[in-house]
Structures are given as C-alpha cells and as structure tokens.
Length: 87
Image 1 (cartoon, rainbow, N blue to C red):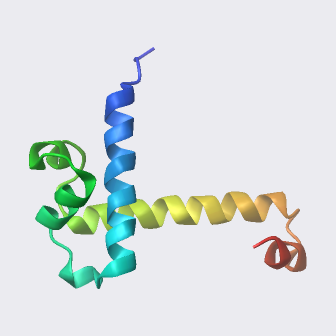
Image 2 (cartoon, rainbow, N blue to C red; image 1 turned 180 degrees about the vertical axis):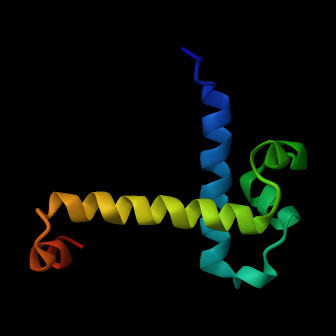
C-alpha cells in the first residue's frame, strides 16, 4: 500500500484555503497564480506539483463542496425537508 505524504496533502489544503480566502476578497477573474502562491505562502513550484491552472483549483474546490453536500444529503435520510433544515 502506498504511503500518504502528509506534506503533499497539507500543501493541497493550504492552496485550497488560500484560494477560498482570495475568492472572499476578489472576483475569480482577478486571481492569479502569483496572488494564490503569495496568499498560501508557497513557491510556484509547489503550486504546479498540485495544479496546472487556477481553473483546476476552482474545479477541485467545486468537487469537494459538491461531495460534502451529497454526504450531508445522505445523512438527512433522503427527506428533502430534513436535508434543507440541516443545510
């Protein structure tokens, strides 16, 4: 079984958190990779180990959010009223 590199996971989390912080301050189109690596306090080479573009970071964040919403929906026993009240 492959060993999970915690530094790799941590870097990815730092990038996503920094991206989220920037989205709360600026429009998506105004965010550059330079802005993101500054916010995350990482090197561009670290960014490129994980992603090829800002668009890919956005897609990753969207995928995670959708997964969380679906997991949350499953805990609501499929009842839409229960789901909405928990949401």
